[in-house]
Image (cartoon, rainbow, N blue to C red; front, side, top):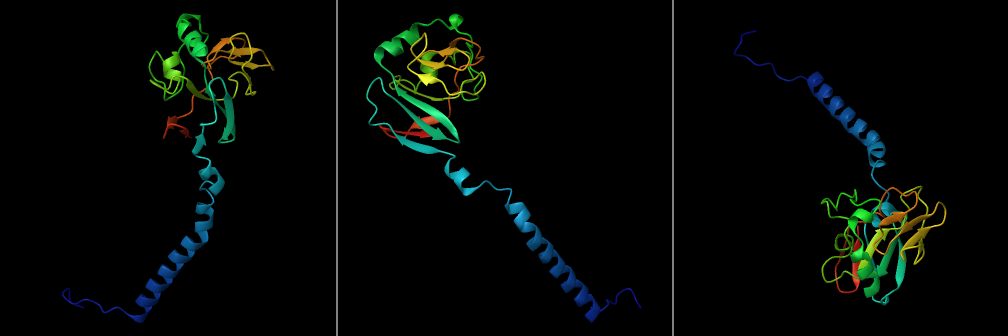
Length: 187
């Protein structure tokens, strides 16, 4: 056979090609359920973020909602609670620098950084799980008028900062934003 001649494909070449393609499709079809089961459940995706209407919360009231299987405290604080939280020196706190990813600066334990921000300082949203052993603290209780974990005696102030007891960190702040005057998006 000369070099410039090309061989014509035979029936056997065609059968090899078709068999290989059928095998690839079969392996892909058989493995798809195993790959697909690694995706999160639809109920988990639905809980990735929630919208909460807080229009019924008057000053001094709290609401507990469930987000990603954990309680989230939403509180419309009074002016006295805000002033008490602002007056607290960061040096007096057990955890003066929160270790949350969304609160990166060294002033993250300030009342303004932990609240909904300028103009909405009365709103505070935080994950309601004690940072000591994962209990759920009681609201408007304890030595500082914030939250109290009766299991081991951790006291949190009105900004969710640990002030006394075995808890090592402040209550965590989830990612949240007000999407309207009365609706907060958590997640």
